[in-house]
Image (cartoon, rainbow, N blue to C red; front, side):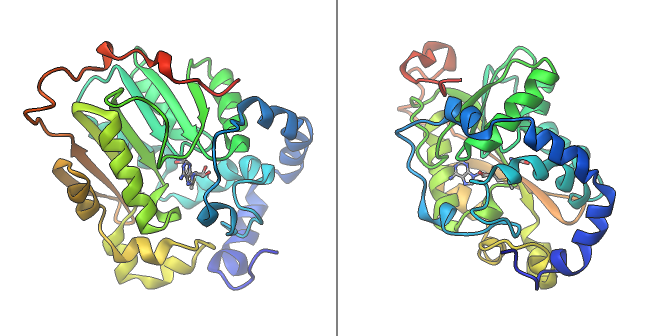
Length: 287
Ligand SMILES: C[S@@+](CC[C@H](N)C(=O)[O-])C[C@H]1O[C@@H](n2cnc3c(N)ncnc32)[C@H](O)[C@@H]1O
């Protein structure tokens, strides 16, 4: 059952519901055999962490492990990322300073940022990873509709299974306010391992300063970990994970994008280029 005491449930949900074509959404939902489609992505070796399966997110029971979340995510998100969803996502893309050969988008969800990454870097190999096979079904549908060649992988961002130094850019948008701080830190450590020397990590999320100042913002949605996220600092986590040149910039006051670079070290100078490391060792999701 959704909680009734969030600002979303009390005030915003009725407004957004009036803007969404629920009949069309239901028809789309019913046109897909979700279990069969999810099975194409599901990997037997992926363990679902308890912080993820034990909580409701956004008032949806079992959170993202519910196909309803995959269908309703985009129609709602377009109204809850002011001033404009595309503008906010573009803020992450504009912060990338290199021309990556391979990009990994962690917690890619329905792939909204992943698709924009592929559009911005058409010659890059782009991979989206998520713990929910239902979100990946939706992401694949969107990429196919947009005629974009993106690979989708079921996995945990804390331990992706990809080889060391296999990406030039690792991104995560709107992921860290949904993961407990120790998980966010583990994801940054994994990102560090996955990046080539000089590779960039980009984290787009709610603005921690603003969330601390305007505590009521933390009550807008049912977000079990957002207060813990607000109390901490992505900058500090990145520094602790070994990243250099760490910088956070504000995006329209309520969002932020943090960039860090994997610094050059004696050991890393030897050879650390994505083109040296084919991804043959990893298996994409069966899809
Ligand atoms: C709020 S959504 C953001 C989706 C997308 N990145 C976006 O910008 O719209 C958070 C996503 O992170 C995924 N997620 C949460 N914890 C994860 C983890 N440890 N590994 C991979 N995905 C995770 C969820 O399944 C969900 O799809």
